Length: 272
Image 1: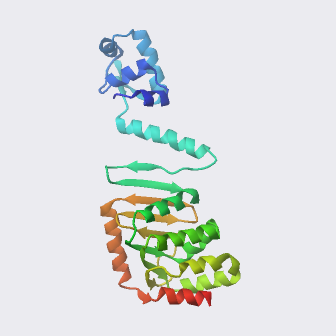
Image 2 (image 1 turned 90 degrees about the vertical axis):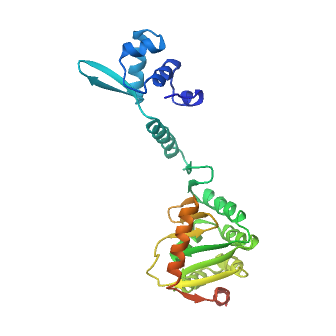
Image 3 (image 1 turned 180 degrees about the horizontal axis):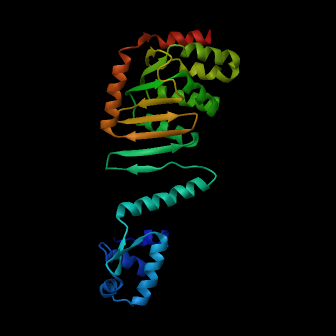
């Protein structure tokens, strides 16, 4: 297993330790390793002890002697990820992770509203004039309003209008009653937000309240899906055609059992 210089520095590996790991693709004795890299057995023995302690090498008994073998590339990748996760969890603010599985496909976890909102704006700007699909229970909307400022919420809605996005949305049946209750309790907080909902190109369907009854919503763009949990402030961005198209088909299947409504008319009622 060959380790590049930057990775070696990050993992605190010496030049000798890297050379040993490069030769340990199969189990070897200290003598075999020494012959392969032309280094003293004492130095190799010390380096192997260090590598074993760091978790890069395993010591196995073969008959009456001991052999050594390095961990696999996959195991090394997991070890690096564990180190990164440890650093993130020990910090004051969490940061998401990004996994690129191919030139086109990518899976990203966004943590905190300071990551989720920019991600949403970026995705929206890349999907101008597109028809997107979204499912949002009113519980998710309430969590959203508790997590971001009224100005941020208006900006969130403005991005839909600005990018000329046609919203094919699904809400629970009592969503508008819940919105109205929230607005009546704090009209100043929601006034601009409700106004920003007007003028959106929207095709809305409602479903029974007990379905999708979670603090989670899903947005399906052209080839990207964004699943957001506002309560825990975490989102998963999925850039993958197959998964997104599968979810869109599931959306259409659910939509068949819903009831069409006039979204703009319902919003006017909220402003009432």
